[in-house]
Length: 166
Length: 409
Image 1 (cartoon, rainbow over the protein chains, first blue to last red):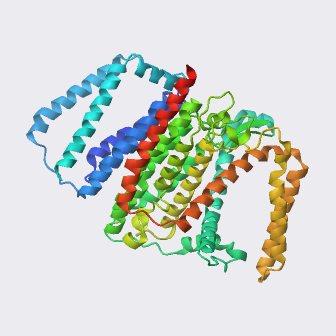
Image 2 (image 1 turned 90 degrees about the vertical axis):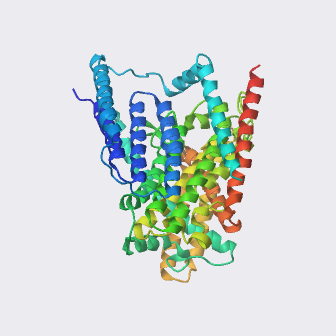
Image 3 (image 1 turned 135 degrees about the vertical axis):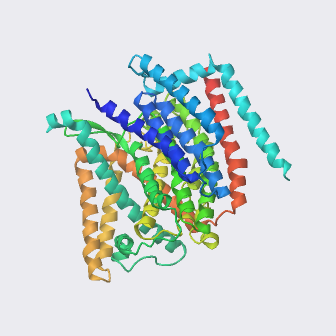
């Protein structure tokens, strides 16, 4: 049985995989960054399909927008050219391929063991947004505050580094 | 009719709405360029366009034909993917942003009730911000892909500017969100309805039930940040012609240039609509609901305007003008009289009338500023964004939440 939701899922999932492969395949950093944006946006679409509207919008705003704009900005500022293709390094041959196989088998077992149903956030966006913020400020308040502290330290570090040059 | 609508309405109605909206918006864009040239010309004591058609009214049509017929050269050394993708992305995102904007209250046509806008999403504000966040790429890629140093500098400037002002833009809205407690633009407007008319709007904040608080700080911050986001004067550094030729679109010609142009004007309309919705009550009338006579305001404006256009048209110097202008005036007059006589037409027109009046006023303000203000220097722009606008919008968030907390006690 093929429902409309399933078709949309396969289109978005296909786009995400396509973007991820293209990210590695492209020789120019900007094209790689654009492929990553495609991955981010299709992931947001998948979240939307699962009913998590707030997460989907934030995914685009934060990852698709802010983070990737900085990537592209830095690549453009450095005027990075086309990358040279190299042969597989020894680390990639002896470390990378076994690790990739291990990761692949773990994901495959996880999919094989799954019940075949995706958990769906059935609540409306408002209530799920409200629930999310409730959780952030009650149960997960310490990790939440620690994260903001971490970001503050990073900002201060950036300012110190920028000041040193003067 | 109603059976078909009930069964397939979810599919047919949006398609019709999209077609109407695209047609209306593209026409509006075209005449916005005409209005802009006319207004700036009169600010500078010139005539502006007046050769093509009466009062230059056919100028947008001539411009469109010119854009289509022009040669579209491909500069050497461009990054083809980025170069071709950028104008499409800009126009696509600008048009998509209009999809979630409610232009009026729900309407009922042939017994089918639908929202006045394309999509009624309950996170519409977040969707708009998501689209704005992606809008940077069009300009950045155009600048980078053109293989031209002026374009690249324009693209870089614009990315930096948009990142900087996006923060202030988002934070200036938080006050409104705290009051409304909702991401839906429709609900934000409905929250601003009250017995006092315009006093209930978020800019004044005397909401029914007393949940509001004046958002005038957020309003000013939002407007400034919105001008910067749409790259308009005095923040149009990405296309500062004295320094960067034309900035990111230097290497674009013909329809690809037109796409950037239409994209810019469409995002102007989108931002003006958002401004009207968030702070000026969207489609709500500025008068208390009990003043029934204000419902005839559209007629009171349209009929004299139509009569004046007829009067002006019959003594116009060209024959074409003597044909077009009285015709246009007759249409306006008949429309005004129809609105006066038939309450069936008058009632649903109220929401859109006020909405588009507000949007029109904001757009006129945009043009007015372009005619009067000089451009910022780049360091001034960055200083202003980071050291003034961002702290002020954060202060507004703190102030608004403090007032709401104090009220809850």
